[in-house]
Length: 500
Image (tube, rainbow, N blue to C red; front, side):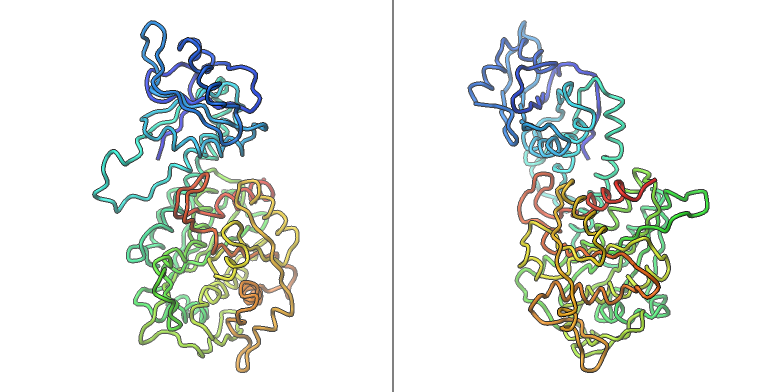
C-alpha cells in the first residue's frame, strides 16, 4: 500500500511534483509559484499552451523541467484540476485521476498549501483507493508494467490538522482494501472455512469474532441456510463480528447497529445450474459479506464510537448427490417454511436465517443487509445504482444521502402486497421465487418476511448490490474488478447518525 505522509512545503529533488489547481485560480502560489520561478516561467507557459484552466478532470504534465543554475528538480510536474468548488469530493476524484499520471515515479509531492486539511486528506484518499491492485497470483509480470509509486508526500502548512483528517480515512481505505481482497480471491482459495478464518485475523483490530459451524446452525434451526450448503464438500460458516466502540469497558447503552452480508463464495446455481458462460464471475457472489467484513474493519480501525454487529453467512452453492432439489421444502430458523422452486435463488435463503438470528440475539437499532442478490436489479438500474429496499423511510433516506456523499449511489425500489402475493406457495408458507416480473422486488419481499415487527418496529434495509459490486471498467477511485461498494456508504451512515 502506498505510504501517505504530510510534510512541510519544499521543492522535491526528484519524482513528481503535483499542482492541484482550482478553476478560475488567478495565479500560482506556494510551491507552484516557486517551481515556476525556478523554471523561468516554464510552468505558466505550458499551462497556457495546453489551455489548462483547472477544470474538473483536466490535467497537464511538464516533463523534466530545466531549473535555474542546474539545480536538480522533479522529473515531471503534473497540474490537476479541482473544478470550481474545491471540496473533499472534488479532491478525491482528482486524487483518483492523479494516480495514473504519477504511478511511474517512486515518490510524488503534492503542493497542497492552498488546500484545507480535509481537502488535502481527501486527495490522498482518492489516489490510495485508485492504486489498489490484486496481483498476488501474478508470477510473470514484467517489472516495467508494475506501478512504481511508493510514497505520496502532501506538502501543507496544516500538517497536524491534515494528519487528524487523514487518520479515519486511512482506516476506511484499509477496510475497502480488505473487502476488495476478499471479493477478488479465486473460489478454490476462498471457501467458507477460509473466509471465516480471515475474519478471525481481524481480532487484532479489537473486533470480537465468533465463528459458528454447521452443528451449531442445525441446533439453531437454520434449515434454509443449511439447505443451500448441503450440495458442497465445503462446510458453511456464520461469522459474528462485534465492535463495542460506544460501550467498551462499560455497560452497553444503546442497542447496536447491525449489518448482514450474503457470502456465497461460489454460486453454480446448484441443481438449477447457471449457464457456463460467465460463471467464473460467481466467485464474487460473496461481495455482500465482503462489504460487511470491510466495514467492521473500518469501524474498528478508526475507533468509531458505536456498538456495531456484522454477521456474514458463508456458503458454497454446488450441485451434487446431496444437493438441494427444486421442490424441496425447508424450515427456517423463524419457523416459517419455504418451498424451494429455484436453487439459484439461494442468497435469500441464507439471509432469512441470518437476519432472524441477528434480530433474535441482538435486538439491534436497525438491520441493513447487502447481497449480490438478483440479475433483475441490473436490468432495472444497470451498474450505476444499488437497489435499495426498506420498511423505514428515515433509514432509507439516510442511506441514500450517505451513498450520494461518497459516490456509492442507491435508488429506492418499491415494496408492496401485490409483489408479496407472487410468493404464494401451494404447499408451504412461501416460495423462494416469485417469477420474472419484478424479480428484485419479490426477492426483497421474501427477505422482509423474516423481519419480525410483532413486538414493535424493526427498521430494515436491503441493498441489492449485484450491479455495483464488480466493475468491468476502471472507476474514478477503483480499478476494474472488486469495488467494495457499501463500505464507505455504511461507514458514512454510522458516522453521521449513530456515533456518540
